Amino acid sequence: MGALDDLRVLDLTQVLAGPYCTMLLADMGADVVKVERPGGDLIRSNPPFVSDGDEEAYGGYFQSVNRGKRSLELDLGDADDREAFLSLVERADVVVENFKAGTMEKFDCGYETLREHNPDLIYSSIRGFGDPRTGETHRQGQPSFDLIAQALGGVMEITGQSDGPPTKVGPGVGDLFTAVLNAVGILAAVHHRERTGEGQYVDTAMYDSMVSLCERTVYQYSCDGESPTRQGNSHPTLFPYDSFEAADGHVVIAAFADGHWEALCEAMERPDLAADYPDAGSRIANRESLRREIADWTATIDSETLLDLLGGRVPAAPVQNTADIFDDPHIHDREMLTDVDQPGADEQITIAGSPIKMTETMPSPGGRAPLLDEHRTELLDEVGVETDTNRVESDD
Image 1 (cartoon, rainbow, N blue to C red):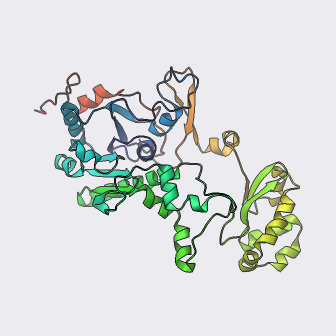
Image 2 (tube, rainbow, N blue to C red):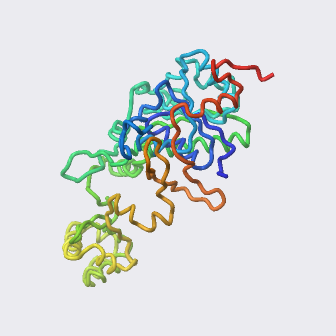
Image 3 (tube, one colour):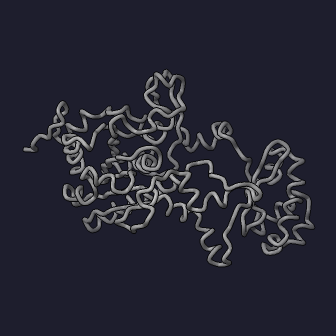
């Protein structure tokens, strides 16, 4: 039993941002119905595959963010399919879509129309630049993907080495962070409805989300009028807070607090550094020379020995690759890797587990992602729609 097992969500989203948002809800028990356009989600056929892409129903991309959902293929441009969709809306709590602004209105399925069929409905959208209902701008209607959002929102400008070009963050944070914020908005709207009986529109824009993610750059610019830019793995106001090369790889050290700095100097056998630079201000002012001192020390020691020397007294860690993560007992103890069936393959695929942990209603991926239109009969039967012809039957 999940915390959201009384919540019915109609998920019209595709690719990453929307599906990740509804995946979070599904992991917490919501009944998420993936309403797919003819042919299905654009990323169903995206690699990688376990063994043979010609045999498998979908790739790892689709599997990862659509686990635990039910699938129904509908063409909202078809009158019968549209009526079937509206029948589903009448019994839904939430509708989520990530089309360009105005797309749902073309099918006469915009928020105002759906609210006529279900006054308590929470309607949520994820768009590159938001929806005019919550703030109209000249960018609305423009296409957007993660790369666009990271570029506009300032993420790329502050990512990378100081002498290198603007760099995209590895994970698709333009999609994923927006998705998380949208899920928060949906749950806030659900809470509001429980108190007042009112549904509402929830809107999260990728561009807006990236500005929020880069919150530090906003107050920095406000304070000194200078646009922050790239500075590698260091931090503009904390030191040491950086990556360092060890004899066999890289480690990160975050010893900016006075106590951590003293412990680091002790491990380095450099009490003079602790005495000469006892506070944050002096360390920041001399960060370049101090960084060289630390780098010279770490370069002579292998990662395991280095971390043993720091002995849990200093925040430090190795820079791991995915194979290291798979081997880390912590990840298995926290159930952060989940095996699910891969249709068309003779073996399972591993996907990321839920990072949200709860003592009474533990979130968990609810099984594999659905086949396209896999749940047509059961879903349409639930709302009294004739399966063969998509004819809406009378509830009487």
